[in-house]
Length: 246
Image 1 (cartoon, one colour):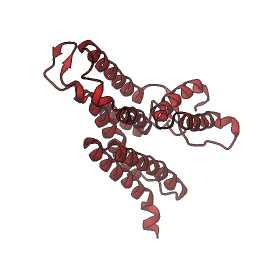
Image 2 (cartoon, helix red, strand yellow):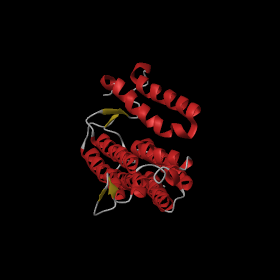
Image 3 (cartoon, rainbow, N blue to C red):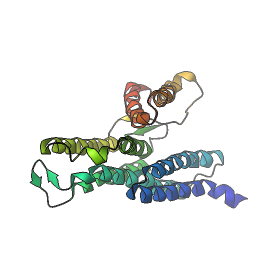
Image 4 (cartoon, one colour):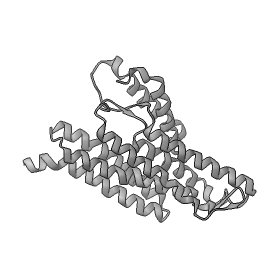
């Protein structure tokens, strides 16, 4: 019984990792709907592994390391692959210049900064009730949410070959800026809301309630298009409540 109690949270973490691996395979093959399901499963397991560990008082250094390693795959490598798929149609052309490499690999900048963010998080003892910078699960929802919406609108089959070369280059520049911004947000010195309750007092939980209610409304109004919008709202609401995040 003690074995199950001590390792249940770790089993959930490994489930997160497994789901992330499957999601990446399907993303590479172009089945974004299965990938979306895998990301959702990983998000749920990533939330409950910490919850279970705290509830059963089975927190351990092993669990901390496993969590970061699993997140590196599900929420580090996966969004990098998603951005790579977004950049893939551009080839190696940039404002009329033929580059000696495929621009799609620029998308893995997100993976590199996800790794950096997770390493920083492991060493930072202050991030108990808030995050410093955008957490990797939220960043994954943002990047894959953009990819998901574009796939639903057949963006990749029409947006690159029916426009001028200058327009294509401007599109590329836009996605490269999104990649850079996303990477910077991961390590930005900005406090972000964490869904961990420090107390039961309502005034201490206004940021979390505003995030929860706003997120639900965005999904009800915009449906799947609202997926990346929720993360943008999350960033904005975190900026508004900066002084309350301690």
